Amino acid sequence: MVERIASILPAKGSVLHFVSPDAPVYDAVVTMAARGIGAVLVIEQGSLVGIISAKDYAYTLTPQKVYKTALFMNRIGTVKTRPNAWTDLFFPEVQGLQGD
Image 1: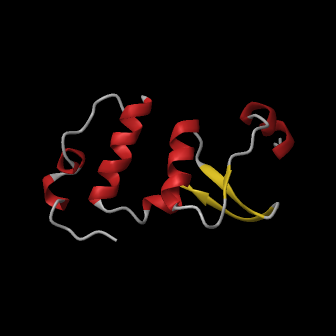
Image 2 (image 1 turned 90 degrees about the horizontal axis):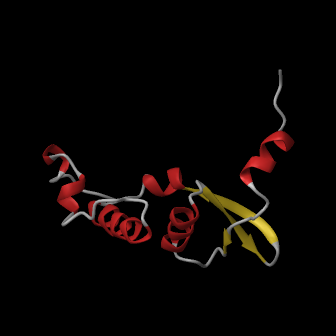
Image 3 (image 1 turned 120 degrees about the horizontal axis):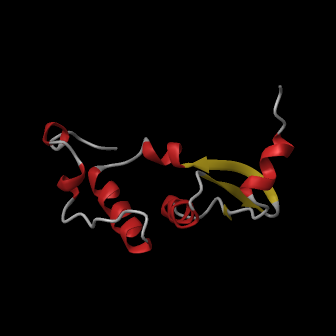
């Protein structure tokens, strides 16, 4: 059986979440975390110009960005335990590595 996109859309909902190309990447990440979605559309003057996904953002993380994101996710309830420092989120072996 070949599943069609139309069969998936009702389960995903009809609300589109988007940001402008000028928005900080953090705005897209906050939108994805707050809405529990994996991507947002990038819309400029009513036209789709791109899509940014959580996977796109994951490749640009430094430990400090991970910490800031984890704090936000704790505030909205996605992460239940608030980290005390970014080092709480990483194995000791990677704590000295460079990010970005």
